[in-house]
Image (cartoon, rainbow, N blue to C red; front, side, top):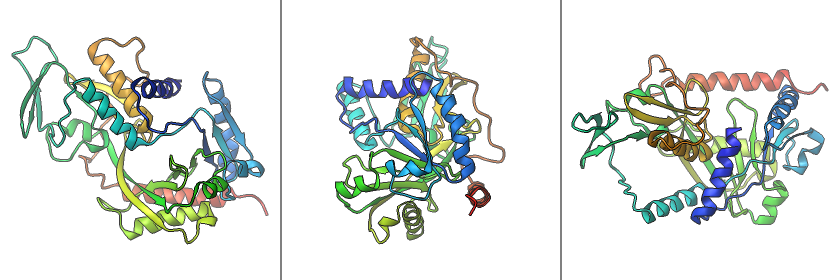
Length: 344
C-alpha cells in the first residue's frame, strides 16, 4: 500500500517541480522461470489486488507474446500500476530544484566523523567533520545506503547493516523504435522470477533495449560481465543474437537482513538505507519520510520506520560472502527450472 503512495508522490513531485524525466506508467511484466513460479503468481495477484491502487493480472504462457516476443517464460505477472523513468534526468532535475531553493550541495565532501555538539541546545545537534572543515547541524540524516564507504569509523554502524551489491547494465545499439516495439509491444518494464533476477526495458527513447543483472567486476565492466549480460538478453530475445552493445556501466544496489526498505534512528542520527534494488522509487520516498520524521512534520508515518536492521555477522563493509551467495542462488535457479518444467 505504501508503494502506491510512493509512486503517486513521485509522479506529483515531477509534475509540481517541472522535472522532465520521461516518466511513464507503462506497467511491469514479470516472467515466470518455471511452472511452479507461474502457479504461485495467482496467489500473489490476489494479495496485491486486495490492496487499493493495484491492478494486477496473471498472463498465461499462450498470451505472453502480447507482452514480449519471447518463449523463455511460462507466463507472467502483469502489474499495470508500475512504471519507469530516466533516472539520470530525474537526478539532474532534482539538483536544479535544490539549487533553485538555495540548498547547498557539497560534492566530494565525505563525512569523516559525526560527534555530539554539547554546546547546542538541541539534543540531536551534531558536529560533522569533513576534509573541508566542520559543519554544525541541529539534525543529521544519513542516506548513503550502498555507497557508505569502508574506512570511516562513523559509517561502521550503517555499513555493518547494509550490503552493497553491484549490478551492471548493458544497452544495445540503436535498434529503431519499430524493432523495439516488435519485441516489447507494450513498452513495459520487465523482470523475471529467478533468485538472480534480471531487469530489462526499452530505454526511454524507445530505440534500444536495456538489461541489468549482477556484476562480476569491482569498478569497471569487463568483457566477462558484458558477455554474461548479452547471453542473458539473447536467451530472452533470440532475435537480438549478433546485436552490438553500445553501453555498459556498474552501480550499487543495497540490501539489509530484513529484505525491506529501512528507516530508523541511532545515537541521535536518522538513517534511511537498503532499498532492495528498488531505489528509483524508495530512495526519494523514504528520504522524504525520514526528513518529515526528523523535522516533526509527518502527517502519515512510514510503515518502514522501525528499529535498525540487524548487523551482518563477520562483516564490515566488504561483502566477501557474495560469490558464495550468488553461487547458491544460481544453483537454486537451475534446480527450480529443471524440476518444474512442463511435462513432455
